Image 1 (cartoon, rainbow, N blue to C red):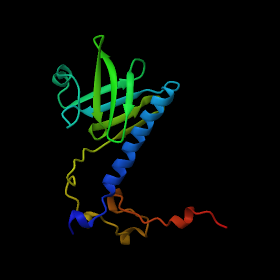
Image 2: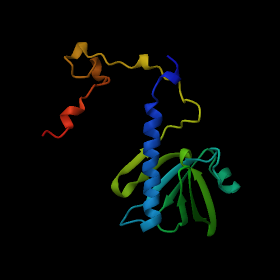
Image 3: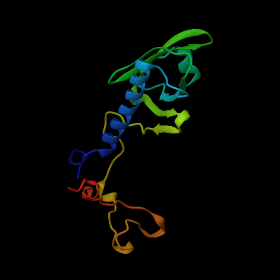
Image 4: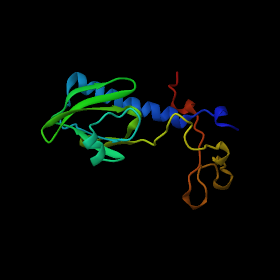
Length: 164
């Protein structure tokens, strides 16, 4: 079975979670950071479309973490990227970061963090659905395999639906 014959749930989940990042930034753009909220955003500095000053790229080859808490300006986000102006040694610098370049988004004030797997425009790592195991013959249908290894479980949504 080729990757074209498989629903890419990994990409769907990744896109949905990046939507959480986008929405959090949109809310901060509109209302500012409420309470003790602050964001740690780690991104790949060598990702296509990342725009940062050369000296920052040299200082942070591969990955950089920024903090949005007290002093940040011109915060913006759209479907593809975010931008923000931060001060580095009292010099304001505009950073443009594609959302796909973000590897970690965290808000420590509420113990919330998302970690993203880098998935490029290709189909990512080879995915073989035959590698998934949904066998529950050896555990009485509890969805566990020997040695505590959890396998897939089928859950009926009917149990969550409102009864009339």
